[in-house]
Length: 340
Ligand SMILES: Cc1ncc(COP(=O)(O)O)c(C=O)c1O
Image (cartoon, rainbow, N blue to C red; front, side, top):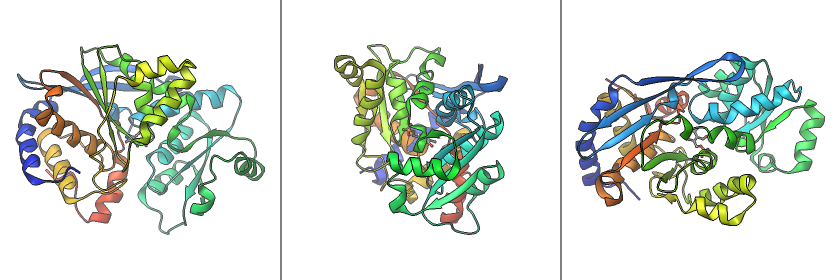
């Protein structure tokens, strides 16, 4: 696992050239539901040795940010088009997806129900409090019950309890979520060889890989331990698109998974990562979230420094948002992630 200090020092020396990322982004409008407009923009760092673009999907909305917006866009549209009044979804107590669903539902006029893993702890943390403030009805269930979240009998019991709803699986990992993620690359008007993305379920990665040209590669940085399962998840999404194993295998040949940057596992934030987030912010004024995008960015910079496959390549890293979760981690660690 990546945690030794000499490489970190070398990476920090390269962060100097990333100061350029702080330059003013290039703005481009994209439309989303009901006329709401989102901004897609890039920060750019372009030196002799390094050509990195950071696609700032984190700026789409403070809460429905990054890939959350991608995954919720067609789910909300589908729910509205099929005359549903309610969305029900699942997540943990710190889930970006839960709070983003609450806010998206409020923005488009859909009631939202969040089924939350584990016991209710009062006071609610920032994530759940924001979800509730955006009108989400929260229901806490045991971890054992939560594991049944894909069981049709369990879902039927929820329908009996709550009435009709549009179901969005945990993390927005369904076909409609995948469909929204297919649009990410179409907004990139730069020549690039590599696109780098963080992964939880792999839905965002699947959307990206399906829209790459043959010479382009997708570098995936799982935020969880044993991230090899991401490849199977990506394959499942691609199967829904192609129904053709050869086409799926063709896309998968563009995938490279770097599974040594989980930093101890999901939501583990060791001191080295905290230091990196703080340094990155000081140099670029860009906030990286502690769960996903910081692990991706540190992994990517590590590869840029040490992997010759990255040399002289043009790389687009996608900032998938998630900053709303930082406050909870700052409280837990009793430290500021974004000091100046
Ligand atoms: C901020 C952020 N980035 C990346 C991811 C990973 O996305 P995916 O589950 O599509 O792999 C998530 C997932 O929840 C997220 O919240």
